[in-house]
Image 1: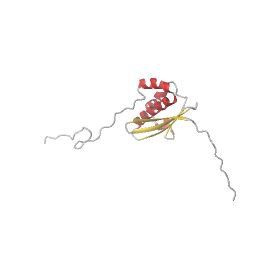
Image 2: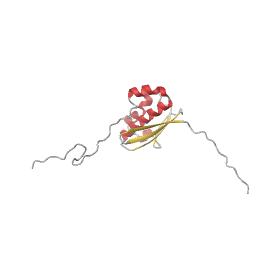
Image 3: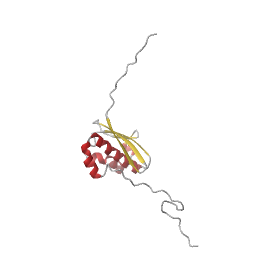
Length: 142
């Protein structure tokens, strides 16, 4: 019985730099590729389709515009949880962390603007006897 050998193809994988961003209950994984064509893809959609308002798009790209690197990278993002605004801020956090992995010299600029700091503010839990975290039921005298 003749034996056959399988040829392994060594495809050189695209090198990427990864960062994880979080905000409230949103979490994302960001991968930055060193391709010159630029662009941001969020959950397999263009950033303009996923974040429709210019304000959210600006939030996502703030770290890149601060370092003048807007079209230097191709960025792939997987984001889940939370609302659209907190997802945009989580993506900004993840992009900032990935840029620091790419070049450690970016840390000082990004740290001074606050993009590397994880925002700890969370929604407060509902308490028993109340309608929301602090909102009490309306009081009636009679």
